Image (cartoon, helix red, strand yellow):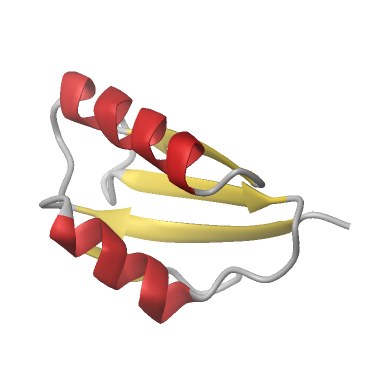
Length: 75
């Protein structure tokens, strides 16, 4: 069963979002990523077909690429 995590980000530029998605797909083979930049939280959604997502490590990795992110709670 896929694991889904949702992150609030500071990404507002569609080109930057596209580059981040490409980098996520290249680095994390089992992840599918997409942004919803129309959402007030500039949401990044990650679906992992390969098990759990280590949120803290993933957030640190994003920060190295210039993206601030925080986990959004499940509702």
